[in-house]
Image (cartoon, rainbow, N blue to C red):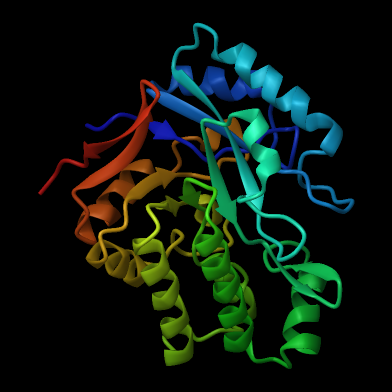
Length: 280
């Protein structure tokens, strides 16, 4: 059996439930080899789901303190949003914190000076879908993937977060045909960019845990295409509660093997290394 690790977690300092210490205790109890914290980076506007700017230093210092003699291994990360001309993982400001790794994600599409959430409040999503993209869900998805491509080209992060997050509301709103050529072509462009970048892709079971999706991010067909391109894989649960740290870990490993992966990336002893997935 491969080691248990998770490098995508959120706690009470952002939009998660549970203190840092509770996550660490849960990881110890579950037999984890390594755990990473990735609170949402502060945004340049008031919100209720990321770190406050005033809490960023506190978050970093608390994790660094917990790292001392930690069992399991503990790593300091940050999930950084990309909003064109406003913020992104490639900003110089993040270097001062010396994160062990970072996750780059797109959660919002900017329109007319405001960033509208694609995976948060329904009213923001519906504004985009109805008023900006005039019920063309594929056009909205294409713009989402264009932003991912842009973020990848600018770089500055280790792991691409939940690649096909745009599908999150598709289960209940049925706004998107994930087999439409316009959609699949946009996905493939992202994968082509990712393959040349050295950035890892994650399997993320967060949507499945919260009942928003019927499967993991990314969908199996995307996982297969990523494997064909040799894109390195990290298995994460995007945990927002301590009990979700290992949610669907074994199933995610099985899915990766089914897609053709034989190794996954793990941060152990301070270095990223390839670990065999096992199985056949």
